Image (tube, rainbow, N blue to C red):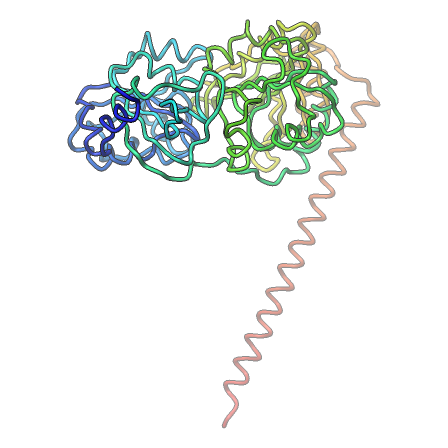
Length: 485
C-alpha cells in the first residue's frame, strides 16, 4: 500500500483519536514549541469521559489545563519541568513533579513511567511519506518507538528539520490535521545587567569554541557580543532566536567541531518564527533525541566545549541552586548538569554559571552564605567552574573553600558584600579582605544608600508637586462652579 493510502486511512478527527485513550492510561505529550495543543484541547473538552489519566509532560508554554480543579479524578499532571502555569498545583500536591537530568528522561519515560499513549505534533508528510518532529525531537520522538498508541497532530506550521527527526506515516496509530501557529518564545529587550553579564561570558569564549546556549536574556546577551569571534560551534539542548544572526553571519559555522562537523546540533528549538524559518529545511541544522544531545560523554567529544547556564542561587561554597526556591519547585534540573559535566570532560572545555547578582528588584542577593532551607542543590560545588555576575567572574576550580568564598563575595552586589563578609568571618574565623578593601566595599554601600535616598527624596517631591497641582486644579474648578450665572 502506498504511503498516501496509509496516511488517508489513518486520518481522523481529534474526537475520534482521543477515544483510543482509556481511563487509567499514562499519556506522554510533546512540550515547548511542539506541544500538541489541538489534541490536548479535545481531551480537556471531554474530560468527564476519563478517570485517573496521568499526563506526562515537560515545560509547557500553555496554561496546564490538567491543573484546574474540575480535572481532579479525571486528569493528573506528572511534570518533568515546572512552569508558571503549574507551580502552584505542584506546591499544593495536586500535580506531581519528577526530577531527572535531561539526558536520562527518554529512558525514564520508557522504563519507569511506561506510558501507553504518546501525543505528538509533526509536520505534514513529504513526498516519501515521512513526517518531521520539527522543533522538538528531545524525548518526544523516542516515545513514538515504544508507546502502544501514537497520535500525531499534523500541523502545516511545524518546520521540517534534519537529523534524527523524521518518521514514516506507517509508524503512527492515527493522524489529526490541526493547523495552528506554534507557541513562541519571543526575544525580549536585553537589560543593562544582562548585557554586562554577557560581556563577561563572551570574554571566556575563544575562536573555535563549541557552545551550549540556553534561552532567555543572558544567552541572548552573550550572542549579542560574539560578533567578533570566529569558527564557533553549537551543540545545545535548546536554542532561541539569539543564535540565528550568528549562524547567518557565519560566526557559528561548526568548522572546528570534532563531531557533526559543519552541523549545528540541538534537541529543541525554543524561539519565534525567526528561528523556525531558519531551521526549516536547513541541512546545516540537525535535531536529535536528548539522550544523544545531552549525554555528557557525547558533549565531551567536542574539544573546547563551553556551557553557559543560569541559576537562582549560589552559596559561598559554590553550590548552585537552579530549580527550587526553598520547598517550592520553580523549574527543573534540565540539562545544566549534563552540560557542566560534558564541558568539564571536554578537552579545553569550560562551564559557566551566569546570573544577575540580585533578585526581586535588587532586594535579595543571589550569592548567599547558605542556600535557602529546603532548596535542592542542582549543580554540586565540585562541578562548578566559572560563576559570572554583572560584577565580574569568579573562577572556582582548584580553589580552597576560603578562596571560593572570597571570589564569590567579590562578584556579589556591593550592597550585600558586608553581610557576606560577616558570614565569612563567622565560618572561617578570619578576615577575608584587607582594611582598604573593606573600606572600598562600605564606601560603595554608602554611596548607593545615598543615591537611593536622593532618588526617594526626588520621587517624594515630584509626587508632592503633582498632588499640589491637582489640588489647585480641583479648587479652581470648584470655585468656577460656585460663581453665580
